[in-house]
Image (tube, rainbow, N blue to C red; front, side):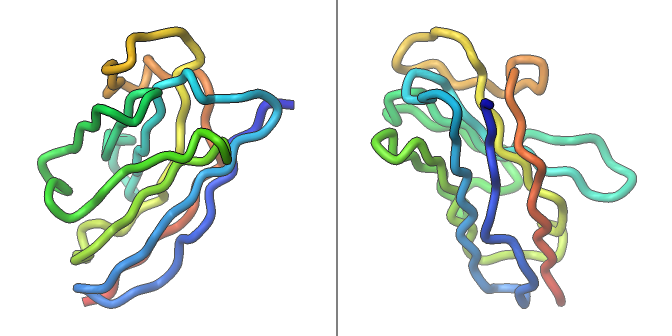
Length: 128
């Protein structure tokens, strides 16, 4: 079956770093735009970062710009989120997603409804 599985979450101190991975299986996602979202308790699931299928275009939420980096390795069917200079407000469950449709090599999806496939999420907790 088609699956996205996140890993790499955990507990870190403010200012620390984590690298999240999203391993896809069931089919290739090498032509899907992909992204990361997060959801904190009591809040809506929000866009964090997106990447085009080619990896040539990325887009970040203002809250993480300059601190987070999204990347992908299509040969491994995997997308990553490098998170540096973490803040307590970054605490959330982080979800990986794939669009499931054909797009240009520069298309980046930022809306929840643009994504058809979702992982189960991985918890990131940043202590102050």
